[in-house]
Structures are given as structure tokens and as C-alpha cells.
Length: 84
Image (cartoon, rainbow, N blue to C red):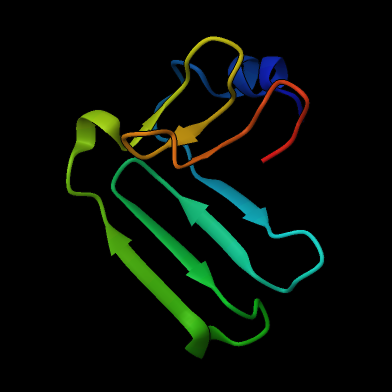
């Protein structure tokens, strides 16, 4: 999904959950506007790590040509070229 498709599907539609797999691994990363979580191994629930959002103003946003961006410095984001 490119950034335009993401915006068309998600903007102004309520809560959004983004789930992505780290290329070449079994690691899953997911986020909402209230927390981020990851699984070091998607096949093992015991590898889960959950982090709570400290500042909701910079938890999730879209800016310019970015798709979803997470964190105050866009710590994790999707470019218009579908790259994370």
C-alpha cells in the first residue's frame, strides 16, 4: 500500500492500527494512537513488548508525502515509495 492509498483508506475514519513485519525476520511491529507493540517472533506471543504513548500529540501523524509516522521525530514512518 502506498501513502496515497493509506490516506484514502484511513484518514478521518476513526482509530487506525498499523501492523508491519520487519523484512527478512519474524518480527512484527504494530501501533495505534495509544500504544506500540512488537513481537520478536510472530509465532511466539511470549516475545511481546508493549510501550505506552507518553505524548498523544506526536504518537501518530501523516505529513507531506509520508504515510503513517510514529513518534515525535517520526521514529518509524512509511515513505511515498512504500519503504519503512
